[in-house]
Image (cartoon, rainbow, N blue to C red; front, side, top):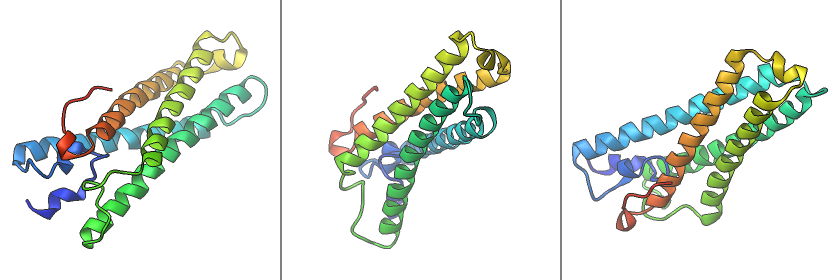
Length: 184
């Protein structure tokens, strides 16, 4: 169970990254959390890009507002996901090559954690604005959206709320000496 357990950075799954508890059941729960976290991000990114590419691609008339909010939501989500992927790969490759960068020993720089959490909060809020506009608007464009699209919008909003909790909790766990239950 040695160094292999250190491959997962704390900001993906604090339990999987916890070097002090290497029991198989604890690590299994950590890896389940990491898989759920990553699956949540992938599903959210796919649906967000699908909405932008196929439902809100028109920037004219009333859908222009939906397009603008959808672009903002997608961009902020992709920035957060990109930061996690970049620093996750940096951590993985450095640990794998016995390098100096181990984010389970040192924390991410504060501007990175703030950027990740801030982008996830922003994308959630943009999705909330889209949902409010689509549900409360009397415009023909909002009324013309299929019920399934509205359901996907609500699902994406829910996934972003869950993703925000996953991420903020992971960022708050930080290091082993601060390992305690925190709710976001």
